[in-house]
Length: 322
Image (cartoon, rainbow, N blue to C red; front, side, top):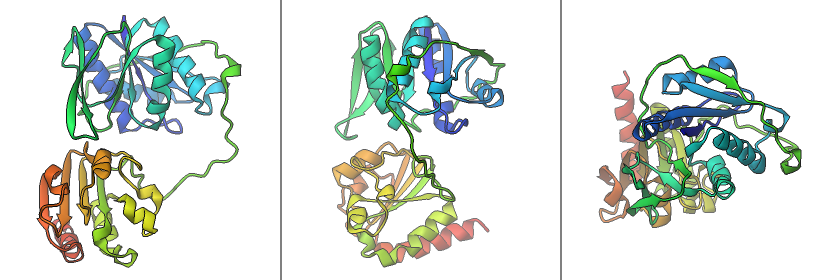
């Protein structure tokens, strides 16, 4: 019996979310009194794989063949399922990102496993296996019991603190056979964004809403983000108006993020928006309306005009950095 953690890589590199999964999986394995197995799919160097050992990954299985070069949901599901069965995994853990959301439901059907998505804490109990997660767009919490022999968990990003437990990880290469007929995805062209912090990777996000009043007023917000080393974001009305790119749209219909710090400037806090940012560790709100819903979820708030508050925030940050 084991706990299997699927560690996604980006061009052969792991990000913080992968290390977070290993830390979480290590603790779940302790609770179940079993071993942790990490799975890496694709071309990843031994040096990079050994980094998983810093966060509790003692045994790492690598699968790398021609079918792994492009993310194909059916192929990756087949690979993870084969390894899970081979390792007698009772719990399979993945990240609750776009890849996890695409693969985990398929894996649930393949393994006849109960699935809990968007989990944000360690299991409350292992008998029965009870998980804690946000529900109703982050407005409530649920205790979810999974009764199947195999359980699948997708972990909300930035919801579990990294726990460093260095050890000498053992790397194994698996030669499992992949059915080529499963391949459905062909990448004809790839364009990658460079020179800009990705919104989903950022630990600090500065976001603007209709309270910014115009696309011409975005300068101070961008300046604040630059001073903090943060990514910029916006609410849906802003992207719909064309003030900012749709790539920056956060919320239930945009990007779901969970940074350490989310600064909401001129955002009222509609339910759909809060659903995408409510997992942030700290929320700071700036709004002229003291009764705006955003203040109900914010740890810190400033009642004031965004266009007057932003320059003062920029000045304060720069002064602290001197």
